[in-house]
Image (cartoon, rainbow, N blue to C red; front, side, top):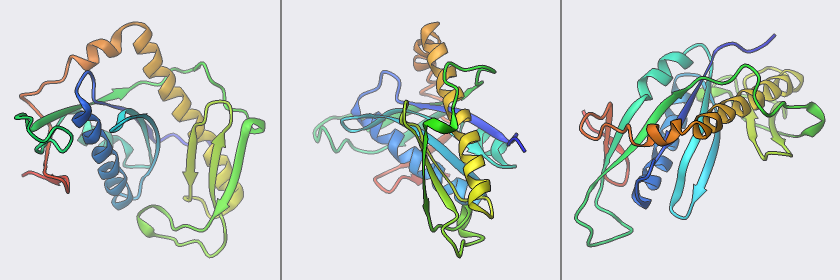
Length: 211
């Protein structure tokens, strides 16, 4: 059975400074926590920089994926005095979260022969359905380095099948981001951050959400 409920997002610091990359890292951690509470799984590919990921492609899997994605799309503001430039006056940092429409046929096709699987013990999303055997699966696509961890299924066989599907959805989402970049669409996305109209606002080092 092909997994249908997944939604892809691009999280980007745009042309922002290093503090915005730090904010991207906080957002990804917050996304993981919220996804776990909602019983969703996330596949994430990060574009690492010196101070954190400048961008990341995120794919949410599960029946609540659409709502999860909708809650994040827009401009995110992090209010925090810079820990990189101690005397810098600016304290508001902005990150953009954009919905991605994966291409029907992306540039990368995931072949099982190119995937390395390993098993681990882990509970399901949100800590539910704790596995009593090593049925959770970590899958790495050797040509691209794309990695997913799957623990939703009740068997190792099912989790391997899900891992292949999720690697493909992650590759397709990454392909969509690359296609936009080739069309200069991401350049427009980066400059489309509405700094005066954030959809979610967080503050200080613990990334506490403002009401």
